[in-house]
Image 1 (cartoon, rainbow, N blue to C red):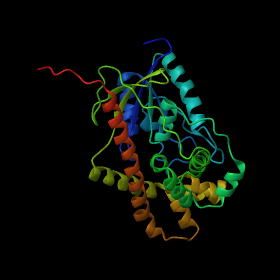
Image 2: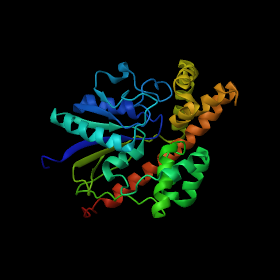
Image 3: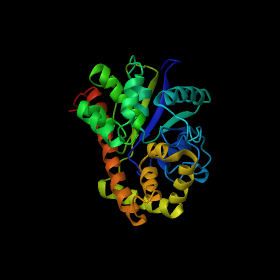
Image 4: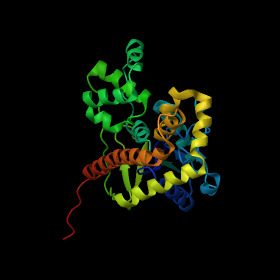
Length: 309
């Protein structure tokens, strides 16, 4: 491994799967520091709705990229790549293992594969797209580029608009480079695998995929959601809404959008649990599709092993 190559551990899984606890356990065992890979936990005040890890749950392990932005501000995948790259260097320089954990898979892709580049912003197109609802934007992306749509959060207007901007110019969002794995690569849903990223050549990546079985994951989602409502999710959304308004609130994810609808008298309080449960399960299914693709890419990239017999 060269001086420029960093070893990192990436822990991924669907919402409510237990990624954060696994990351803390790995950090304590292996001498690591944790980098959050979550597009919403960067914002201060979004605690219950994003299930942000508490100081007690951190168990003394340093965590990075939490509470670094005001909710009115934008934080992009490019910002994440810049911050994560710097932190990986700093953590490695301290002799610690950088552990990246979170559910924003687009950020993992941006760090390890790179972002589509060379397409300038189109202010005129953006103004026209802003007139459409988020659901309409996602439908347009799905129709034009189903592959890219499957990778996106359907509630993130900024990313949907950027995707449509690139599609308008190129016809589709370019695929990112595929992974290539070194000799000895292995991965399953329990044990970590090792993954070398061809085009960056900066990281040797070990992956841990935390993916409970369907019934267990649904139960975890519902239990976490019930806990969030009991701990004051509605109160948190009311405060955040008062600070940033409804347009920005709707960009902060399902929990904030759905509870915001209740606060605007567009739905009943009794509808919150079943609606959020259904929407979060749909989101988890999309995350699991990304995980299956990741798993298959690693397996297919691994060199075949000779038969011991």
